[in-house]
Amino acid sequence: MLIRPIALRILGVLAIAAAVHFSVVWAVPRVMMWKLLDSLGQAGSSANRMQSPVLPPLADATSRRVVMPNPDLLYGLCVLDLERGPVIVRADPKLSTYWSIALYSSNSDNFFVLNDREAGQLPVELRISTTADQPKAIVAPSKKVLLLMRVLVPDRAHGMDVLEAARSSLKCSTS
Image (cartoon, rainbow, N blue to C red; front, side, top):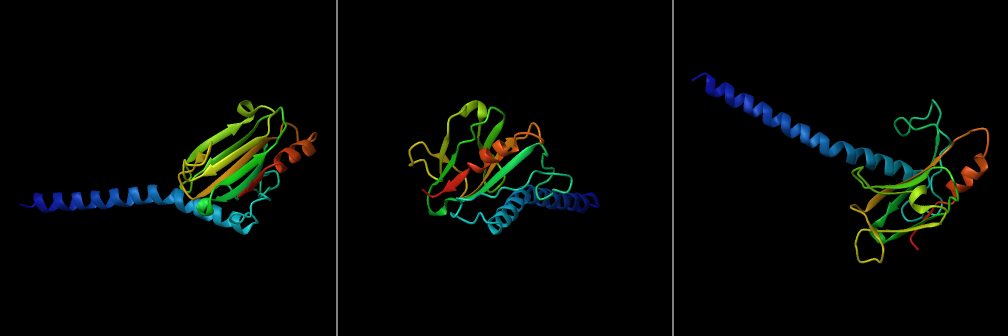
């Protein structure tokens, strides 16, 4: 008789623990991205006025806006709001060193990456949309998307102007 109530309590505690675990696993990435997208929007990359992406300075020991930023990379960020339609991303890095453009959905899942090996020395033009009806569109799984451009800095003492020009070539707009 005593075993049955204890077993029910244990099952109840396990059910609550499982529910809390799955809730946290589901919520944490979404809350983190929501806060990041909101803070970037306030930093000048507001919804569909993205012609000037956020270009933070080269990371150092005090940089902690993003967890553990790489001090050997220059970053460029755009918040893409696809609610009003597709967004066009253009870049012309013209670099022989590593660079990449990655797209992240509102739950922090990476759903697209393009880098220097795939694009070569050609200019990049990407159309990001929430539907597949756009020709050659990259279909985003959410209406808010974070674009992260990375440019490798092989030598901080030389060639920073070329790297800055490559990063500054990033443009995000509605047309």
